[in-house]
Length: 273
Image (cartoon, rainbow, N blue to C red; front, side, top):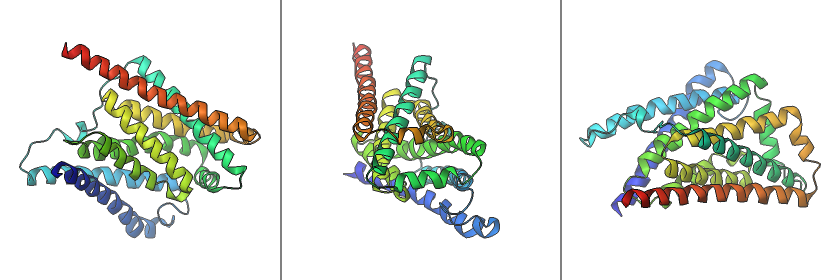
């Protein structure tokens, strides 16, 4: 029970730090820059970059204060995320998984349009049009990396100590889902699924790079599909075709995650022998 409470405490602590970064942007940066409150107005991707940098820096301060208070000597804050090298085959597979998640997301988004549910598509358009395309792509790389360092490398890592892995993965999925609220309930569910995938892959491979690769590939390919008109083309697909794309891409992601789990179990068995 104590470990579970500690896990929740860690999540609340770093979530509060992120909330503080958003508050500081709204109270200090917005009156100066005049871009609008976070998530609205102009330069949304630049707003996000500023908040992520502030949240990571504040998390570093809190991390050191916390362990000094506990009179413990933790690993380096910057090494917390675990930037271990990964093989070329894992790199390629993570990129494919990111592309499959893009297809999964796009198919659901366009399927919803056939039922006049536009929240996901509307949010994408607002974000897409908030800055010029080159800045959007750069931010998709930089902001995605910073997001995953904050939420998986720092928040998730601090919370998963001494508890069954199911619980920290579940809670990080809930947090990531909550952040998708402006795009509607379906996007929240997709965000939750992505959070589970991130946590699961991170646990199995023990490096932040696979998670970052999935996230970057997903965001860059989604915006690129919007730029070259592929999303508009998919919109012309029939509902059964879109359902088929959703099922195929979803199953690929599930079986990929299970494959890494089986591989991890096998390697552990070899090590124990």
